[in-house]
Length: 141
Image 1 (cartoon, rainbow, N blue to C red):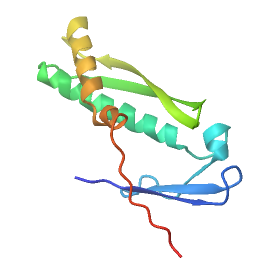
Image 2 (image 1 turned 60 degrees about the horizontal axis):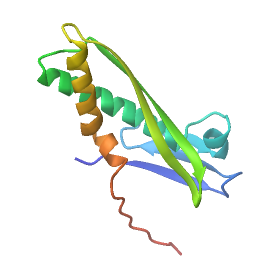
Image 3 (image 1 turned 180 degrees about the vertical axis):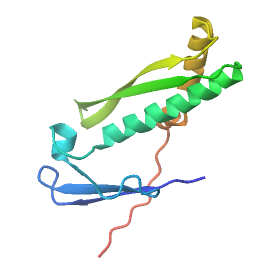
Image 4 (image 1 turned 90 degrees about the vertical axis):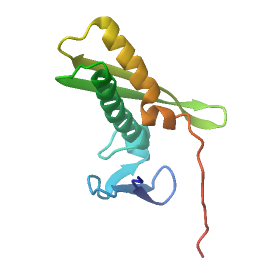
């Protein structure tokens, strides 16, 4: 299975602007810019999108781990705080902090902790953040 998204950027870093779209159409030419990334302005930014993806992925992975323990969550709510810091050589995503709250009838604290740790390790987005990145780049005339 493959899913895709695209981005278009015009101009320089500080005054340029871009638009992000997803194959599903959920995002369609959604604006992003220097302001939305490093200041405040209407639109999104890559770190926010990574956070949304990680929170969603982790919640689904936690649901699976709870199911393996014969538990069904009534509700799982996860927030992902993505930290972007300036380091030697440029900016880097240095951390993602997941905060999850769940209502799981019949779960003990021990069941829940085991499931959350397994979900954190097994979530595909968690794995992505440690993945090799490949690239195919072509300069157009």
